[in-house]
Image (cartoon, rainbow, N blue to C red; front, top):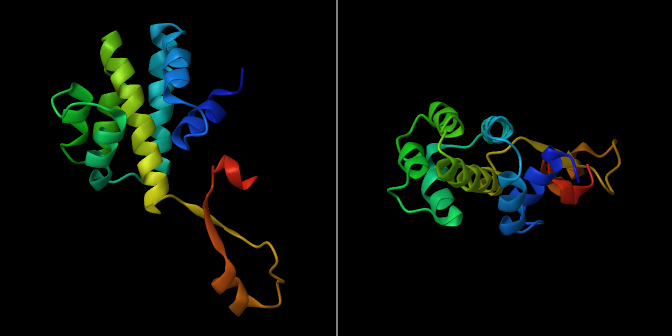
Length: 147
């Protein structure tokens, strides 16, 4: 199977169905699941997720506002809340956390708050004014871009 980084990014980019991701996430031990959640929280922080990403992420993850991960993400201070979500221990909460963190990563990626790499296809380096107009912003971990 593919490396976990690739699987997580494919899920966030909807290149892999969430049902397949949930099955993949449910297979390993509780410790490995916790490691995956911590990795996802780190990815969300790298993607510069904001508190404003919370409501859309909850909706995409299919969670009710009363589910523990949803309550946590809605509290603000996103970096602290992502860590708390990643540390939830009941099995059903870990699966909800997984779905929510994938959604947070996707929303942060789409919102343009993620770090980007300018694409320079078709631009010569001696035309800096053209580079600014033609550069396409691509998330640094976007697998579709071939970077």
